[in-house]
Amino acid sequence: MSIREISAVVFDLDGLLVDSEPLQAWAWDTYAQQFGTSLRDDVLERMLGLRAVDAAQIFVDLLRLPVPADVAMRERDELFLEAARGQIDARRGASALLEALREQGVPLALATSGHRRYVDLALASAGLSGVFDVEVTGDQVDRGKPHPDIYLRAASMLGVPPERCLALEDAPNGVRSAREAGMLCFAIPEAGSPNGVEDADEILGSLGQVLSMLEPPAPYRLAASARPGQP
Image 1 (cartoon, one colour):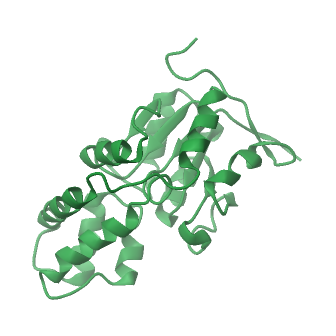
Image 2 (cartoon, rainbow, N blue to C red):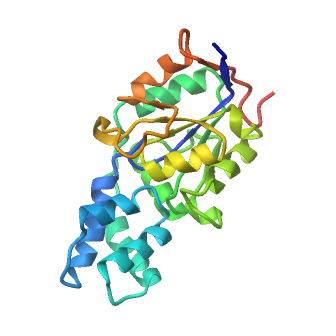
């Protein structure tokens, strides 16, 4: 059995580390109601894991709203950010996993579709500010997930080849992004449902299972180097 060594771990944010997606959906639905319609489940599924600008385009197109996508994104953001302040919590096991990896000297990156203003708010609300060595947000790349740009930028900033990185994701678009970047990818889908994330290398039931997958007899091993900026 071949062993794949992992030198860094790259995390998605929404639905993986923080429980923000119900509030995100509420904001989109509340905005849609201004036009006499509502956010359908099939539309939401298409939007999950995307940058706000890309999600807004799908939202406007599929619901046939009489408003430009950039306007919908901006006005929906006002609803969401106001409601989200102090209301976004870390998901179970997130803090413990991050702490354990940091104690082992594993370089950590955040690779999220969220824009900088939201990401700062979410990390502060969840008590995760300052945890990551590198943070890449959706407004730092030309193409969001499912394209590989966010993950490739994170690996480059860490100074670790993508094939030596483990990506942790919860949504199909994120899994596709990480795999396209050449990373090993574990999916931890919300509610444990594997639908749409079958392309992940492993599908786990919780964040608490990640470390056990990096120990014998699993075919993956941590080979941590010093975090960026450390000798």
